[in-house]
Length: 291
Image 1 (cartoon, rainbow, N blue to C red):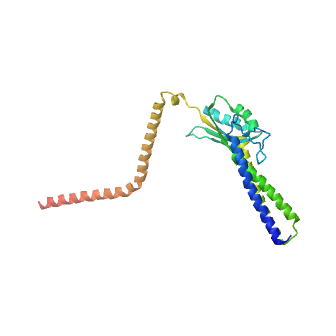
Image 2 (image 1 turned 180 degrees about the vertical axis):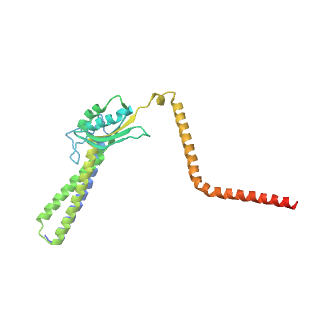
Image 3 (image 1 turned 45 degrees about the horizontal axis):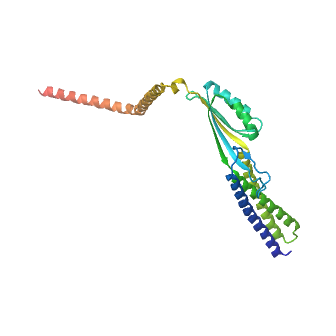
């Protein structure tokens, strides 16, 4: 095989690989979009319908990939917040990952805590049942369809893998010049880099669609004065105290700012006053002597 035929064959493989990736991706995305329009059962992280029919990426035609996020708010006595937060962190063990856990305590503000975790779909219901209770004052669920993204990434993965395999076979069987071999190796390295990037994207999508993301917030429960008819009086009392504190702070700031100047101005004023008194006294004495 001469150099021109080698380069033509290499260019043809690259073009065929790119064209196949585009065509297969468009076909699989179209098939997934058609399946997404069809009626589906209750939302789940990954649902399968029609196992016998498969799209261009080899996936069942009725598969949907959903990313689920839940937001919980716990309201309980302030003394129990940290204890309950620690208990929920301890529950996250098997098929569960704590992404963020924080608790805030200070004398000026009540105790607050937050928890963010990711749990596998199979273990989610059991974990949520253990965390549930009368303290849950708010629970919100959000779901986002990621089917088109998953199908597109999987189609590109499949076609890039096929192109990599063809380049490897071509490189193993070629016995020509070093320049063509190096060019093929560079193309093979580029394709392998694209494969690694696509694999990372697929892993991120898997974490989003095969697991449930939970955001939990822990707040102190409101007192009777804060929730009843006395709330306006409580707020007025707080505003009055805040206003008095702000006025006192401004007065102290003025005194602290003006104090250095008083030490400079007072001697001048005192000296001027003494001088004026002496002048008046001298004038009276002069008038008395003339009379």
